[in-house]
Length: 255
Image 1 (cartoon, rainbow, N blue to C red):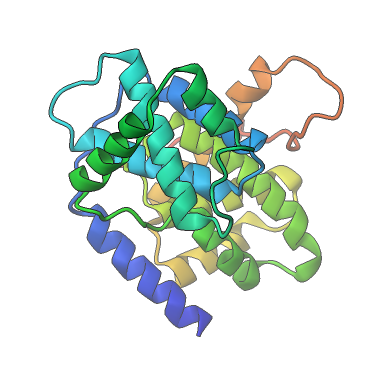
Image 2 (image 1 turned 180 degrees about the vertical axis):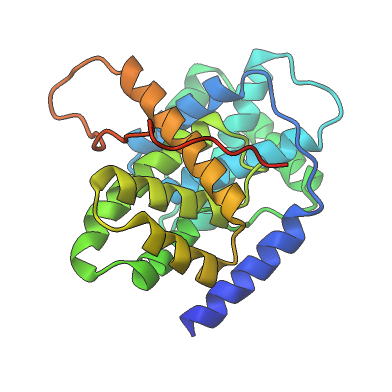
């Protein structure tokens, strides 16, 4: 059943991505950082952040004119987040206890503006809002590739790497399954838990990935993580991965 589910997801994913054009908002990085912090503050699952950025990236790619008004693009970003929560969360949105409502109130967004923004996003995307994100593959990958005792530790590190990657990279530029596999490989390498060649063989056999693309994406993730480590000021009790040694790995460009 799980193998059939995985095969179906991969088929849908690749057929969908072949039709996508890529265009990024000039302030995407700032938007992503704010939304990532918002998901942490509201204690929602990481896949909601991933879906939020996927909806935002797809909306921007289908919008002919650039969004120059800061207040408007913040409304669009928050509306993408609201939509993602409605699609992924089992808990109804409560305007009395969520951070999003406080931002809407502080910025004086009316209920009509919020409703109209969500409608604009939905209509622009032809109501095709639900989509696979890398997190959808993680549990399946862990069951295939790792013993039970290592799964929780690896899962935490993969989720951190995914958050960094989604903040930095347009979600339309990389297949969700490829990003999930690359983060899994990077986490395993950083924690020195399993032979890299063994993981490569399992991923290539199960996920039908391109080895050059996989290695290139993994290298990109590792470089992004190293950059984040350099920018982090020491603070107590901060979540952090084990340092990843990228000195011996060469970047292979995808043709």
